[in-house]
Length: 455
Image (tube, rainbow, N blue to C red):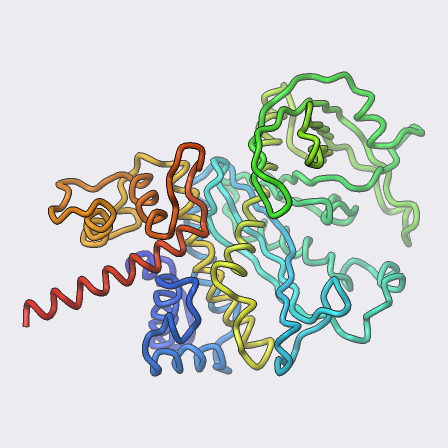
């Protein structure tokens, strides 16, 4: 499992090659035991101390840690014709960590922590390719309770600027030969992002929340799309979350070309132009009574020539869920909110490190689903998959050829408690990070035995 870390971080520049090697060792420890605390993952006190000293170093910035992964991500992106750049904001809650300095209030004024805005790139098959942008900040206490005043500020002075920063970074580092589609939820539905200058091959697909006025008529966005005759149906898989089980949903499709008015309550509004976009409305047919039915109104600059285009774009929007899984892995899998560090800066250093680990876990999960017949030696060395096979199947003789990626992921998940019963579906990230921890212990035990036999 060490080889991927070398490939991922070999271009990381921290001013000293020894620091780069230290980062590789830290990522290796944390990826082998993602659920463990830093001391548990580091095994020895010297490695634990080295990890904390690394995160406290005045010579290293979080952006420097992310740079190597970003470079490796761009190399993966360059192999695709179209890539999805999914943006989202989450918060890290450290309310119970009283000694922590540098945090601010969260969406609940009684909670303290950090805000994090990330751009996760994903292939059109749903494989996470990596993080290309991440901003971390804390809200100032003096801003608490001044929401109305903040609304009057220009976008550059508000948190919504992060969406623009993400788009600008996306366009600046992704090769021009690759079409990039920025995907975001309703929080991104504001005029400045929709009107942000885009390079050739850069498009967006954003879920609308505002019932905007349309240019040249008295109609509004939602009513206009709802009045369109249904143009087809499609089926999507709705992923489970804490409030709903997974299910298959049938969606009715409507779409139309619309032109939205520029905002009328802005300074220099005469300089703001109307925008012509494609609008897609999908509504769920006969949803279960206990769940909220799907109703998505999507705005996009992507060209629509026939119904199949629309179905493709709706499927792409379904992949927005992956960034929520990424945040879930960071919090529940890597335990980023459990870290007992003293300052917000050290937490951001830790977050930059754990972001690589979280992406790798997510990549492994979805690569196995999209390329089940690929060789497992993309992710495991020969002795690792042989030990895994022998443990799961209670066999002492090795296989003659490497099993498939889907097979080894299933076996790793079984180590993590996955039962693999009919109807259980594919293993998720939770059982995988547990299984990887156990596999690491098994491999380490085997290596120790081998060294004793040699000696």
